[in-house]
Length: 318
Image (cartoon, rainbow, N blue to C red; front, side, top):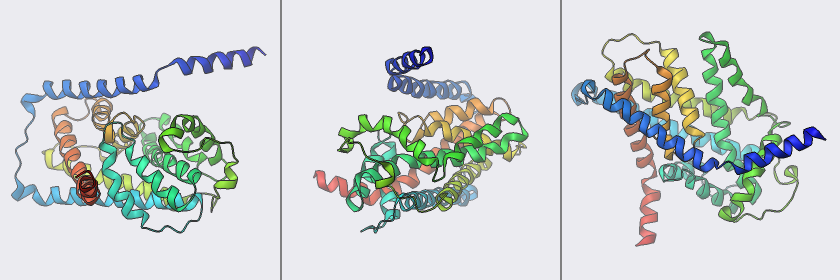
């Protein structure tokens, strides 16, 4: 009885916490943190570009960012297919790529709305809702798994493997039930009927583990990191750097940027976390310039791939 009262008290306490305000505060604090480091290192920061020497490297980084978009799209497609066999009228890959730019719109959730409506039209609302919201969890699991390579730095990183345990047919329903807490708030936004039903009746998982989707998410992170690494090597002038350490920091920072939806595309949060986690192991002026180059290149890749979608939206408004 006492334990039940404690759980009720804890539940009421969580409801009173303004998580949206906390996320907004974290986002603004991250921007401020990055801005302070930028100003402190302003005298050492140089954006002198030599396109004759570095043009091919920038292009290669851009191509890897485009590759990462398509790998993420293939991961999403396989998540949808894992949740239930459907016969899509259109190409899931192209639709994902076209709507990817919407993650930069303030709020960072509008790409979910577009994908939810698309899947709802070719399947059922429940499959659309859960397959749309679960994709970031797949990405988070892949990022944490890759970050766990850092066990050579500290055994603590081994704990990051735990989320992947839930990516199987028996335990994934526990994750989906947790998503039910979002359903009440999302019901009106997604125009989803908030009725009770059994998940197993509307979602038919096609295999025990979503191996294809997970491997594509891993490929996505590797491709993103290579794009960043190319930018880093352009800026870095001979300083020896542990690539494995850089990779672990990249994955952890990407994960934190992913779970803060207030940050459009993780802007500011990813960069601030990267600076914080890297500490004094790498000169901050090198990291700052590398992060700025990478952000510009990755955003440009998203914008280029999504241009037809944006152009179509613009014509509708005209």
